[in-house]
Structure formats: structure tokens, C-alpha cells
Length: 278
Image (cartoon, rainbow, N blue to C red; front, side, top):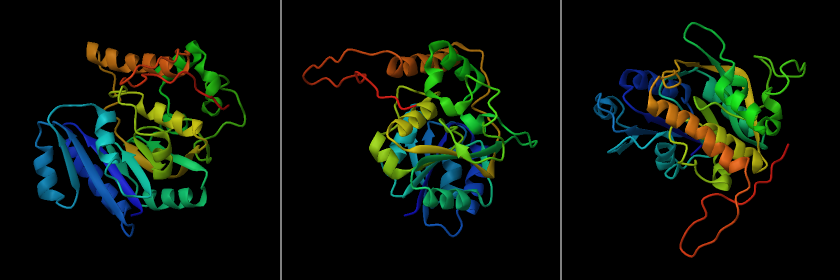
């Protein structure tokens, strides 16, 4: 199997239908499989999938377990050489998968790849290049973690060698809307950290891929259209807790050195040290 595609869905029935049709069109001629993990949707998404997409592998959860855990359910079942995690609010370009796989085949040092993202009205999304939203960029600057993300233009916005919209380059972080990863890299770094319930899982996974010695690439010679439904700010306590809680989890993992405490029968919550490669 060449490719395993995974989409996590939560009450996005209409967008999911569009996303799946675009993925299937883009994967024409490729040996692939598609998983949809449904997080207890109430909008008849599962019924739509079974009627309109009978060949797709559907995993249903009785509760909304979060994006990270949902992806892990499917990753464990994948058989593809590559894994594509794509959000349900995304339209994949007709040649996007073909071109992205060709790039990965040619660059064996690549652990992951992201592509140029545009809005439905054609506006380029800056997070295509570095994976970060502004709050995450501010967080990395304030904590000092920015020094570990030299390819993300966090500390010097005037750098002339920084990647432009149509310039292929390395990138520290892949945006969760479209993450094409080498299965070998996932096997090496492990599954997605499920403590990142909804936000930050893509940043953490991308960072771990780099720590494992692979490179992440920004590949702008193809595109996706992203409606960014899940990325819209929500003025609620749940949003604040999950969004900023993800930052605290990330800082705990990589900024602070946690003493190694071993107890029989108890897994260590955080590794004691991390080797950071600049």
C-alpha cells in the first residue's frame, strides 16, 4: 500500500463529503486506503459515509475523544508507506497527492511534508510555511523555545533567506490541515501525544520528527483549500483550556527538565531530557 489517508470528523458532514471526494479524486491511480474517524457526531455523518462511501474504513467513537486520540486509532491500522492526515474542512487539489508523494520519494530524508494553503477566496495562509498561528509564535518567543525553531521565522522576521510563498524549503512544523508523513518516521517517533486533545498535536509531532533526525518540508508546488472551521477562535472556557493548555503541555515536555522517577508498574509521564538539534 502506498498511502493511508486519515480524516477526523466531528459534525462536519457536508464539508466531510467534499473533503472525501477531493481526496479520492487526487488519489486516482495510487494504491491507497482511507480512514474516517468519527468523534460521536450527531449530524448523520456516519450514515452519510456508509451510504455514499461504502469502501472507506469508518471508525466510530461513542464520545468525542479529541483529534489526537482519534488519529491514533487509525494510525495503528494503516498499511501505507505514507500517512496523510488531512482535516475535514479541506479541499485537496487534483494533483496535490501525486506531486507530494513524488517529492517524498525523491527526498528520503523527509519525515513530513506540508503544502501551500489558500482560503476559499484565494488568500494565501501564512501558516502554510511555518505551521504556527500568532498565539503559538508569541508563546515560543516568551518561553525561549523559539531558538529551537530556526526555520520558522520566529525571531527575525527580516531574514532575507526566509522561504517565500512559492519557495520549497525546510520547515520546523507542519500544519495539521495537511500532514503527509513517512510511516517509517511515525514508527520511529511513536504515535501522537494524546495529551494534546485538540490543539498542538501537529506542532509536537512535527518537532519529534525533527528530533528523530528527519526533515519537514514546505512544498508549495501544489495546494489545498482550507476553510479553517476548527481554527476559528471560540470565546469559551473549553477553548481557552484546550488551546492554552496545549502550550503548557508543550513547555513541560521540552522547556523544563523533569527528574527521572521510576516506579514499578508506572510509566514515566515525561522523559527526563530531550536532545534538541538546532
